[in-house]
Length: 248
Image (cartoon, rainbow, N blue to C red; front, side, top):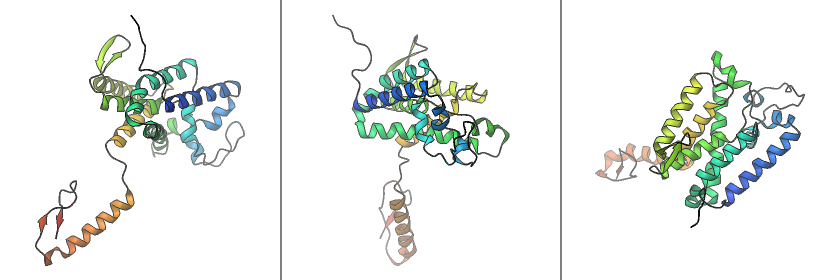
């Protein structure tokens, strides 16, 4: 009789991400001031003055990527890396390393942009997003949870490590909890970034990746066709996703 735990050995992308997170955690443990430079602070993307450590971080666009590799404690990084392994392994096997890596970073950056967009809104609550630091891979991890629920909707996941719940319902419940906690003020945790990771993952998987040039070219050709169609007999045809498709 043999026993196994988890989805199997580490896949290449997950192994690389874990190593990068581990190295970043050790480096910032001994030099915590780097968190001020590499953590995501929306104010640093727009303002000129040096930060509280005296470092000039104006227009620090790199923070949208580097914040994903920083964590605030042992439990923070362990939980994120465990979830990355448990949920990400099957996704990387299914997608391949290249697409998995791209999806992971798209979700992480999307989660970071959520914080930035909330921070620049012209409302009083925006200050709670504009100035504080956001760190952690949780936004990207929540994007992976969404993808796992899409591809393996009936796969049971232990809610609170006790109740088995199908993956699609698990993510719905988890998303609702994040929304309620975010509405309650967050309590120092970036729940809105978690929601941003979920939303980004959903949009990306649903085909939000438009080729802008091709789309503009198609719209221009459609306009020319519609402009001259009175000169010809018109028959149904054209691109399938166009409800008003016509060819001449």
